[in-house]
Length: 464
Image (cartoon, rainbow, N blue to C red; front, side):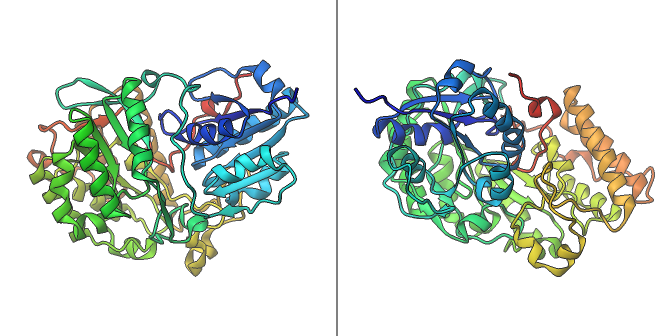
């Protein structure tokens, strides 16, 4: 009797979501006859005995934080099971190919990973591409072996009630070429649509497992607007009480204002939007294809519709100045977004991963240092040491505020006071508090960290 190959899929961190990146390949591998176990190190202790039995251990690397944590775990897994074949897959796998192979990873898979990952079991001698963008016939993710949804992020509604949040993806990749984005080196401006019925079936099983809210994890939900419209229309028909959130570019929100009422009508309660900056020069360097005026228009339209905005920023860049940072805070206040901005967004510092399109800009290439295999990025120092000192002060205020559950209004006031000192405007008052947007509570996810948030030392430490 032939023995079924034993595969362990490992997620280290996926922004507080039940890992879609384990559930999707699990369906493919089980269909191919493999025995599949799923290990989410963000919520579970490792099953050492299962790791010892594994023929293949594959780490899912969707983001920088997950990759840094995996880099600490991979050597330990090799100690536990020296005979197992190791693989790494996901967005950050190909850009860290050299490092992963030095750690002992034999197969590195980027792009559309399910078929290649399955081939490691069904055709072990087959040569696999580092990045595959083949169009796949997606399967309904298999979530049977994953931890329960109530162990993951939840949504807090304005009335204080909580909604269990499931997570799925309707598209992958992105058709845009924002220079600072880690998707671009892998997908190069292409995206792939997940069949609508597959998405709806996945949502159905998430609802059956207790979800009353869905996070669509697409890099941009409006990359395929017709797909998005048809999906949310049918989603609402099948699950009229279900709410959802999605990530959409400012550019798309401006161009497709006529579609925004449909989002509201079908249960959308929150739109995450990578605003990044209000500085036109920074937006141009990032190739964001929107302006500060576009952001203001989006804020107005969403507010009129009753759709909450979750803006994300890259607050510290090589082009940030103390005066510019204070202006950044002033613009948030003027737009009434103080109550909408997750505290960590005030302290996000530009991350330059391997292969970043930003390195094609001479001014960035001159500033960036050699790739740091521990930090998994090109470190950089601001030309003005005062800005780096301001960053450290902001980071400390945010960390302390989060630990103390400081309200967003009070935290903003602390940041303003500190930034005003650095900008030579000690004692300056922020724009009128009546415009801060604190009276109208907005839905918030319990884990608001974005993809460039740094992992904590506790996260990085193996627990075996």
